[in-house]
Image 1: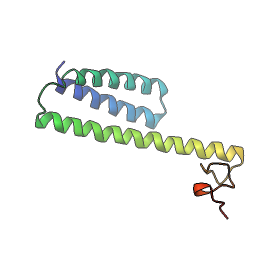
Image 2: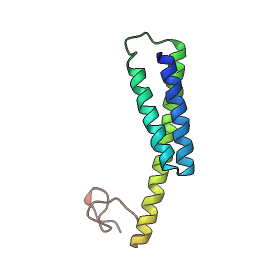
Image 3: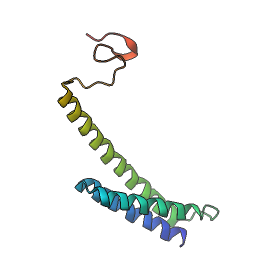
Image 4: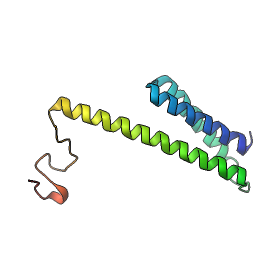
Length: 110
C-alpha cells in the first residue's frame, strides 16, 4: 500500500469514527479506530519517502478530522461528567483539589 493510499484510509477511518461518535455506535467506533491505527502504521512504513504536496494536503486533512474527533470525545466526556456530578449532588462540579471548599492554588473560594 502506498503512503497516499494509507492516508486516504486514515481519512476514511476518521470519517467513520466521527459517524460512530455521533450515533453512539461503540462497535463501529472500535472498528473505525482499529482501521485508523492499522492505516497509521501503514503510513509510518513510508516515513523515508519525500513529502509531496499531495501527501501534505492529505496529512493536513487527517489532522483536522482527528481534531474533530477529539472535540466530540471531549464534549461527550464533559456531558458525562456533568451528569455524574448531578447524580452525586455536586452541582458546582469542580476539579479543585481538596474538594468543593478548595480553590485555585489551594486558596479558599468564597
